[in-house]
Image (cartoon, rainbow, N blue to C red; front, side, top):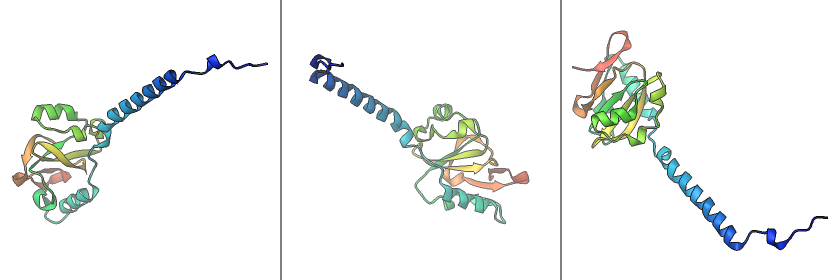
Length: 155
C-alpha cells in the first residue's frame, strides 16, 4: 500500500521559488529573441519595381524615383558577406539586418537603404549587381544593366 506523507509536498516557499525561476527563464528567452523580432525583411514590391525597370528598354533604374520612402544612401552587400564586418568597416548601424541570410547564400545581392547610417529597408536582387563595399549617396544611385546582365552604377 502506498501512503503519501504530507512532508513530501513542496512547501509554499519552494513553489514560489520554482515560479520565480520559470519567470526568469521566460524573461531571458524573451530578451534573447528580441534580436530576431525586429529584423528587416525583403520588400518584395520594391524588388519587383526595380527588376521591372532593369528589364525595361532603357535598362536603367533611378533608385530615388523608385524608392519612395525616407533614405539618404545605400550599400550593396554581396553573397557570403558578414554584415557585422561591413557594419564595423563603414561605421553603420545594421543591427536590424544581421540575421539576414546573405552570409550563407549566393542566390542574391542585398541592397540596403540607409537613413542616417541606419538600415531602413532591404531588397534582395537576383545575383546581377556589382557589390560595392562603399556607401552610395541617394543622388548618385542610378544603376544600368550592362553586358551579360550585370548591373552596375551609372557613370
